[in-house]
Length: 201
Image (tube, rainbow, N blue to C red; front, side, top):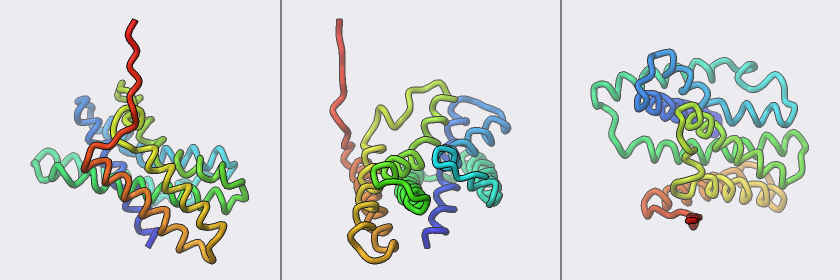
């Protein structure tokens, strides 16, 4: 199930990258670049940080193909207005919840301490989107909108803590996934966010 969700999350994050490229009027090459870096950026940084080389998409090239295909399909769907406005935020929440849990699980499997595993989960979930926003010349979404990185951190934390006290990784993964997904969907529905810092001279 989580392998399928991992591939689904890759496709969804690639779609958000393609839509960001469309808002900046980029060509098809730009669409593919943003789709791919959004989809695999977080996992790539995680693997490099943990010393897991070659990184995951070199060992499993289907991630690149899925990201590329999702980017091109998004272009067609958006061009003919076949993409419902409410679909991508929900799908993105599913991708975020999946990636933060998978990132934390792979970090634990690599033998790191629990705090580092939580950080790796957050990094996997949010870093691709940060690269996308920086390439588009915008303040990253994770720093300025509803609860996003906070949802990833909560999901990773619950997953890591549960894995230490519960038998089997599957239960811990589902608990972390549902925590991150529930928080993110609640943030979208009720526009929940952390307090904003405003400074005036």
